[in-house]
Image (cartoon, rainbow, N blue to C red):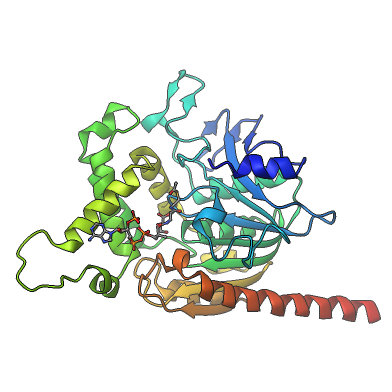
Length: 367
Ligand SMILES: CC(=O)SCCNC(=O)CCNC(=O)[C@H](O)C(C)(C)COP(=O)(O)OP(=O)(O)OC[C@H]1O[C@@H](n2cnc3c(N)ncnc32)[C@H](O)[C@@H]1OP(=O)(O)O
Ligand SMILES: N[C@@H](CCO)C(=O)O
């Protein structure tokens, strides 16, 4: 975790730790139990007296709690979501190797790391853990909850649970249920990991080569044909081997292996597969009607992993939701990169809603 925790702690006496040790047993959606749950999180800025300036960010598959690092341009000192005005919270998700309880944590029952004995978990479990952290921090209202991709899945589930008041909900490049296409991509990545026999050896770098291949596969769903043409096209026509695109796939695979591990990747990709807001509820559309927040759904026009039809579906079924799309040659990963466009769209949406809310309050007052 980054040093920001200490910097923030020094400024704010309210948060002296970046890890919340949950004292109860955490019951997963599956019914399985997890003891000694630890939630690593980062906060930036100060919670105001009214406790109404909370911006809560949910991260995607391989990021961490340091949202000012991975979502720069949207989150930062001079950005739309800044610690001067807002109290920004970001929690590392269950299963991730950036501080929250994960497959390499010690299982208190055996005294050994879990590895593949870690229980499977769902997006709904991740949402329940955000709730635990909000309770711990004394947060009852979130001004703006935002997430992209797997982060958007969590934000949506948390909003549907209705346990914390969410004023504004921003869903980016995400969906109501993970698609057969998305699950197939994730399964292909897990197949790659499982072909690496070291994955079953229970050591921290187990499945390293498998993870490298998995990231290479995943990248094809995060980028586009155009993006590869733009960045990896050869400048000469006489090559028959050693292509730039090949080197790029290798590089990206290795880059992830240096900061992540195959066990976290395995479990988190399964959590993504589990996402379906309709599970145990009347239908997906009915579940979406439970969202009470002012909602903005943003899609990326050439996203092949979470196609824009999925965000249009969300916007159609969430009551009074607004929809916007952005163009980005990158495709899906554009949600991490196109921060100027996101700032513009989200900034306008929040301004509009602030004036709408003011109008409502004024009307109630004069009535
Ligand atoms: C501790 C941490 O880092 S955790 C937090 C960081 N990660 C996250 O938050 C997860 C989400 N982020 C991401 O998925 C990514 O960072 C993204 C999508 C935002 C950007 O992806 P990037 O990999 O930076 O961009 P892109 O796909 O353009 O690749 C550029 C990299 O590939 C390298 N590259 C480009 N072409 C080639 C090639 N032909 N051969 C080899 N390497 C190449 C570049 O040199 C560059 O390397 P660098 O990352 O070491 O600077
Ligand atoms: N590129 C993202 C996954 C896509 O949502 C990540 O590595 O977290």
